[in-house]
Length: 329
Image (cartoon, rainbow, N blue to C red; front, side, top):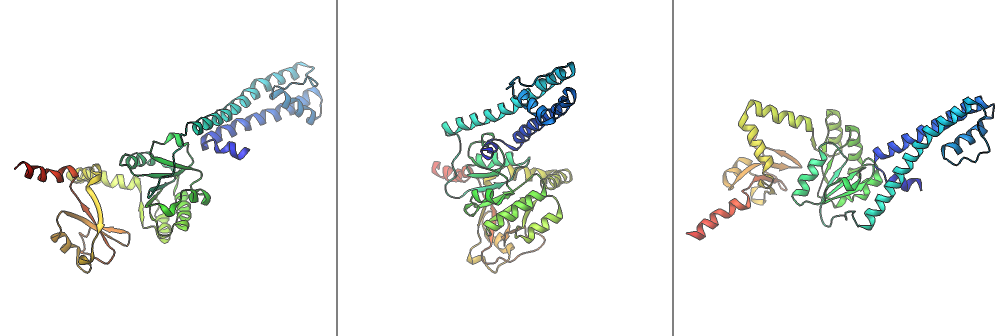
């Protein structure tokens, strides 16, 4: 029963309820001890009196007989009763809200087909979820949060993202890609271990800061590690040093449909990237080899079997303009 009740709450709610119950227990035990001294009663008898007083049962078989005892009784009633009432109100409110959500079928269904997996919660996750859901990409989020606080199009697997059983519920083997975040680098590392254990071939990106954690993630086979603060600082520094470079980065980020990752093809195998750029129509931004991306500016990598090209493509609206002009002519 306690486990079921705990699942109704997010972590902040659980801490709030635990704080109220803990404070009420302190008041009850302290009041019982002082009452036993004031009324010259055994502690167990005074504890029984304090519990019946705090819970508003009040059998009346034990009552204060002096001013100090009456003062203690008043303090126990004024402090403990509101605390217990607030805790019970939170529990009953959460249970009622969960019942309403079940009745109205407000919980999202697990997405069919492929989806993106986001493990953990950090300040950047809500914006990432908005971007993915805005593009119509199914997303599964593993975090200890209320599903109703997340926008439509995101299925929430509620639980501890560092727990193996919670990760298993997210079915990582069916995900196309995964992003791991967390409150700190330690949580990210633990989640990565659990995720890699259940989905060894899954492409994973991790948001971390410490170089030592990046090295540990690399040993797990996770090559794509990003530091949000470092990425932002470098982008801003590039904008200050070369203003138009910053503008280019902003336009690339804004035009989400301008990128495509395609197979290099057998004809490109064994040839340098510069030759592919010369022959191919459009802009080849770089080469993806063994899960790592390279611009190929300082060197000229050779395309191997299984490599992919990251290309910039015109939006559908721009692609259709030449055809529309031709039709008019």
